[in-house]
Length: 207
Image 1: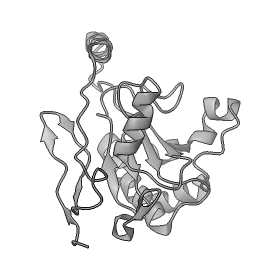
Image 2: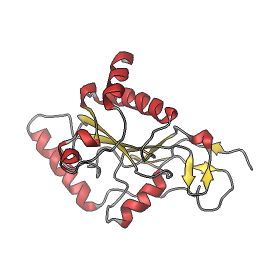
Image 3: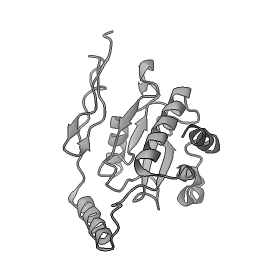
Image 4: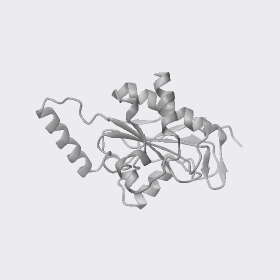
């Protein structure tokens, strides 16, 4: 097996493609994901909100106030695969902004070196599609996990949240699991199947 090589996320203007992996095998898994730019409807809605805020003197421009943590409810996957699932459900792109891998890229292929790797998903300034009531004011992070996260995934989540907190000035108490949101409670969600109190505690201690 060829040793995998990694390339930095490729930038297309303000859009960032997910990191891709070139191992040569198996065919199809490591094809570069296509960047799906926001549709006209999404851009019009975003620009309308932007103009309204600017008219009121609000220059924050859709700044995320929350970080919502999810799990994929699957034992394998990638941002590319989730994008495919979401498109099949009628979404215009992957619903999450970031995906944390567990190293299992398909049902029959695992690359442990990627455990904890973070992939970039939807452009953060466009409304997400992951949590009802929060999609226009949050960053959505999804781990490839069902009932259990790996230690590497937890570490990556903590480091990513710390970065986002500093970038967007988010209150650490606003890091919520999907199950802690109003819509998640209404739907009896257990996602992300992670002790969010512990995660928030660690993040506060390390900031």
